[in-house]
Length: 182
Image (cartoon, rainbow, N blue to C red; front, side, top):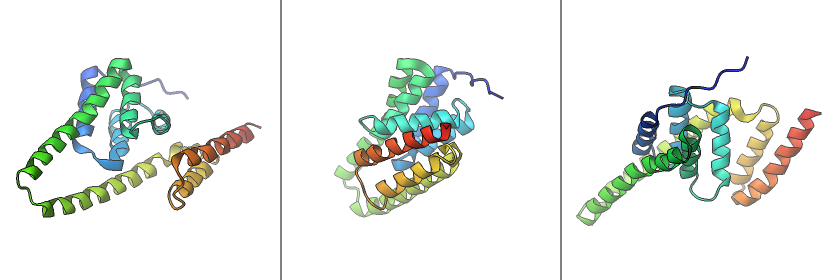
């Protein structure tokens, strides 16, 4: 049975969600916040649409999370949604950076920044792992899992550059997709 598409949110609600993500998220875990807010809590897009958005945002030039915000904003509210989604995502962090810079240049001890950075890095890694666990069902089953594993090995332990990972994994994906249609 095909589900009807979810109702498009009001622009104000979308901006509130993107602003919240911008205010409380950090590092590599931001995609998990997007998934939680837009897919799980709001139901504005499906898991499959989210995975498509992540894939597109990663192959586009520029920061992945900004690309993801623009893609999702466009999906929900066109060009205006894309521009405002990126603004809402970036503005809270920009204000925070300016405030921290002011504190730093006005006597904040550097010994306070190291524990915060360590905590943020650990949290971001945990959020990225949680997002992967939630999205594993959308990998495309038997043909998607090998590509995901290959991508992980190439990019993670082997440290291959992203252009090489894509150059290997895209043809493998195409071959597996064609083979599964036979």
